[in-house]
Image (cartoon, rainbow, N blue to C red; front, side):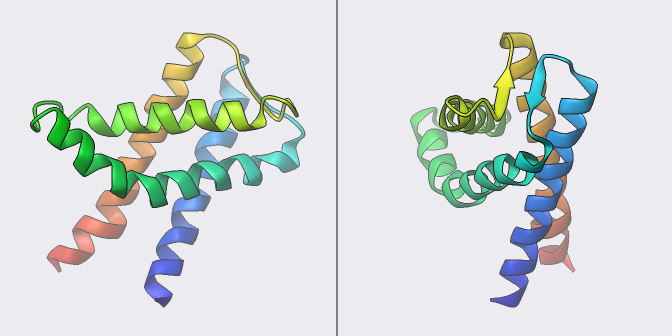
Amino acid sequence: MTWLLVKLGIRLLGFMAVFFFAARKNPKIKIEPRWAIPLVAGLFGVMNVGMYWLLKPVLNLATFGAAWFAMPFVINLGFLIATVRIFEKKKWLVIDGIRATLYLALLLTAAHGVLWLGLDWIPSKT
């Protein structure tokens, strides 16, 4: 149980870093006020950790495993769109344009892959 909470905390910190980096480097991605970054990243992280493991097998079965390399990107893109929709009334997370959305989804998918590799795959092999 402790290891699960540690992994969740590391994932949340990783996603916070990605949101912070993206908001600083891309002017079309705005997270304001700055204190909302942990809330935005936390919501995305909870969806990513909790729902990702439920959706991935279903979508892989629906595509017969043919799109295994694209599934993490598609799922993270969906979670990102849901996160934007949840925070759109308060304007805490604003992404202007499809390119900025795809850019952030790609960064989040890369972070997801690095976190999976470091927290799930490598420890299971040792």
